[in-house]
Amino acid sequence: MTPVTIGQLRASATVDLMTAARALGLGRTKAYDLAKRDQFPCRVIRIGDTYRIPTAGLLELLGVSPEQRPATAARPDAPRPGTLAPANTRPAGNSRH
Figure (tube, rainbow, N blue to C red):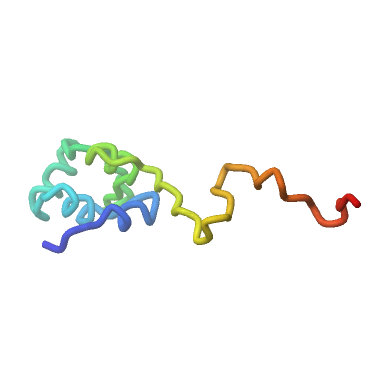
């Protein structure tokens, strides 16, 4: 069984049943059995013969935040997302003499 990373789970809004099963350490037979009996440990969306698992609920079940934290800025002097530029920075054309 190939392990699943949190990054892989966060990559889309839903994952297939086997990806969710691998994240939970469940085998194929057990996962499909639980899904068919509406006993899979998180929400399952059935589309015809296909099962999709919303990643937000799966991540919550795993105790992981569904949101990915923003990466730190590449430049140390660059403002972080959600912060303002330093006060000593003026827009072009507003220089004082």
